[in-house]
Length: 443
Image (cartoon, rainbow, N blue to C red):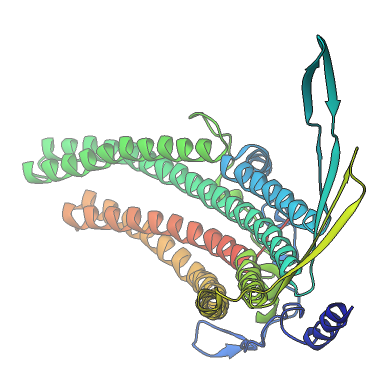
């Protein structure tokens, strides 16, 4: 009786101890705004594009079909789903630890008496129940709950990354298609120019050096085409692998058809805590280390186990044992110090994950703003270069310009067209980066 009173008093004294306290997210300092392209900071609307469905961000029906297919068949995502199932089973196991363990034994003996065989039975049922006075089982269950949350966030992280990767790969494929089209049209145009310069040579208006330069430039354009075609096939193979398929042709639209004309809002930085899977996973990891530390503290306190047995022959017997760790204090102390250090590591990692997340959002916003500001100037550059090519060709025919000026104008136009394609791709990728950085695409 005295022992039971002593245990009850100890339990009451420890009820305010960390052993029983649930994890609480630490106070973290988060900036109230993101940096802009001019280096200043500006507050953002509380509404964020991360709250939009990915179908609202990516309106291309071909891209939507690819993402939907990948969400059903991507190997990494399927593995992540199985990890969640594993964590669910582990949580069930941790909950069952609170219940008594029951065993049944059916020993049978044979004996011979006066030529007769005698069979005797001694069936028994035994049970063992550990009373969780000092939070050992409680913290184990809470850690299993956190592990489940971690795996669920890992699944979300794989999902959001998959959506972003499919989108980026798709846009890159469209950009390669457009580049190929530019080179094909340029090659055809330059084939005509080669014939023109040859005719001018025959008429004494150009020399052999001009013909050689034109042919060399035409050959360089022609050589670039198979390289782009190979890049297109490789990109299709990469997307096929993301879909969980063998290499195949990817159905797609065109780069110029992609609609990105909507307000880009990042929301307030604190929303990263609610949306980004890696931030939430880092928080759950910190919680797991917190409960590990509590488990290490529980090892210093006694454990109470009740054993009972009921036999066919023997009556019901029960015995309670209170085990106090006496000879493992040094080992338990070392384990506690290790757990504390791991908890502090997790705390620092949580803070750094928030910093990295904020940096990614800021970088995506800066890139998107830069691409917007480049669009008008790039279009003006391309229009001027088209005019330059036309004027220099006319002047060459009149003898007022040289073939080198024509070559230079053609090369500048081709470079500007390819750069314009890269600008379009960068703008689309910036939107994907921002959407992903804010934790968009959650299930």
